[in-house]
Length: 434
Image 1 (spheres, rainbow, N blue to C red):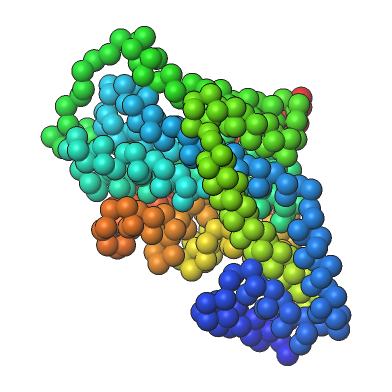
Image 2 (tube, rainbow, N blue to C red):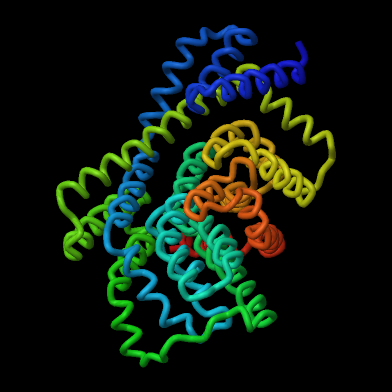
C-alpha cells in the first residue's frame, strides 16, 4: 500500500474515532495501534507499553503539573478581584483608556497561568461587567479580550511550550525565555490597535475617571506587586541559570502558596480545589502526550515522517515558503483540534523536515505557539470563543468576527518574527552566553 493510502487510512481512522466521542489521548493511541498492527512487524502491545511509560516518566515533564498548580493557586486568590482596581489608574491616560486593562491584565495573568482559556475566563470575569457598566463598546471589549487572552500560551510559563519542548526535545528554559519578547511584541500590537481605534472613534470612548497621584496609583496596585515579584523571580531564576524550569516551577508553587496565605485566601478547601484542578488538567494533557508519543513511534516504524520530509524537500520550497505553508497548515488544523493536540500530533512528523530546512528549533517553537494562539480564536473549535460565548451569551460567529482584527495582528507578529528572528533568539543567546 502506498504512503498516501496509509496516511489517508490513518487520518480517516483519527476523525472517525474522534467523532465517536472517544478521548483524544485514547484516539491517538488507537490510531497508532492500527498503524503498527497493519503496517509494521513490531508487536503493537509491547511498543505501546514501552512508549507510554517512557512518555509518562519524563523528568522534563515534571514542570508541567507544577506550573499548572501555581496557576490554579493564584487563580483562587484575590488576584483576579484586585487586578482591575490595580491596573485601571495606570491606563487612564492612554488612548482607549480602560480597554487596555484587557491586554495588560491578560499579560500579567498569562505569566502565572500558562493556559489561554484560564486567562480568558479570569480576566473576562473581571473586565467584561466593569467595562460594560462604564459604557465601553461591547465589540471592542470582547474582541480585545479574545485576542489578548491567547497570550497565556506565549508568555512563560506556558503549557504549550512545555509540551513542545518535550515533544521536540528542546530546552524548556530557553523556550520560556524566547517567549518573553514575542509576548511583549504581541501585547504591544494589541494595545497599538486599541489606540488607533480610539483615535478614530473618540466619541465611543467614555470619559476618564478622576485623576490620581503617583502614590495613589501605587496604593491601588499594591495587591499586584507581590504577584509581579513572583513572576520576575521565577523567570529571572531561569534566565540567570540558577535553576532549571522544573526547579523554577517548584519555586513558583511555594511562592504562590505563601502569597495566597499572606493574602488570607488560602484555606484547606482552596488548597484541595487547586490541587485537584491541576491534577485533572495535567492528567488530560499527559494522556494526550502518551497517545501522541505512541503515534509518533508508530509513524516512525511505518516510515511516514521520512517520506514526508523527502516529499517536502522534493517540492524545492525555500525557508519562507515552508514557513508560510506550515502557518496555513496549522491555522486550518486549529479549526478542528486544540493546541496541545496539534503540537503533539505533528512534531514527530515535522521536526525532521524543519531541522533539514535549517530552521532553529527554539524559533520554530515560538512560531508554533503563535499559530496555535490563532487557533484559539478561529471557529469552529476556538476554545477562547467558547469561553467568551458562555460569558457573554453572544453568537459564536459574532465573537469570531469581533476577534478577527486580533487574528490579523497575530499574522503580523508571525511576519515580524520571521523578518527579525532576533526578537525570538536574542534572549536565549544571552542566556546561553551566561
